[in-house]
Length: 124
Length: 174
Image (cartoon, rainbow over all chains, first blue to last red; front, side, top):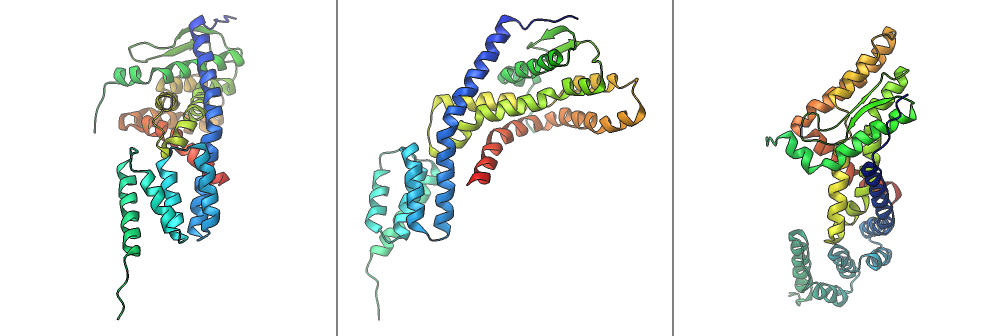
């Protein structure tokens, strides 16, 4: 039988793919943990369990400290839990970061809601 | 519909073609089928090929033909997973872009080619009719996949594997 050998460069490519798969597997652990925490946080937020949601988001933030998305969720949860000052602080911390359009809209919308809620209500 | 010449797509996604041919050759070796010639990548049609002797059984022939479908899908999904999962976290990491490009390139070349389908169908010429009826849908699917590449089905599949599999995993465990 002709047992055609794999050329050296193909063996090198195979090793490279294997190394990349190992790097990916290592990086996947943190990424998967963060995504799971974010998903659990969203579920808790939907169920109005803001303390649990905050806990999940904080766990995700430990893995991706610069994530705008996680900070925005933390701000939303803080506001929903009545911690308006904390929500405002988180939003302020986003000031110098690069945000995607969707995140800018989300941050602006939350800021407007916070400002509106802080204005004294007129009662008759 | 944007039409991009095949050789440009092949150039942009060459790792997928190399892995595709590697999968064929690897399964030839596993099934004890002699490989006569291999081209892992070239500018031409087909962009890569493996010439091998006739497999000793239809099962082995099927395995060699569809090996890249499973091999490329799994390797592509694994490589793209961390980049796809962390893209929501605004981490503009060059390594993530590299992993995504590699993952999508590899996954989009999962579909066996029409040459693979013809080789599979040819290997069944001496086999009983019921076996040909059994394998016919697989051959038809391969042809549909190959024709689908004209409407970017292969790219859609690659992107789907890269982003869809991690999403499914998160939904499963969250």
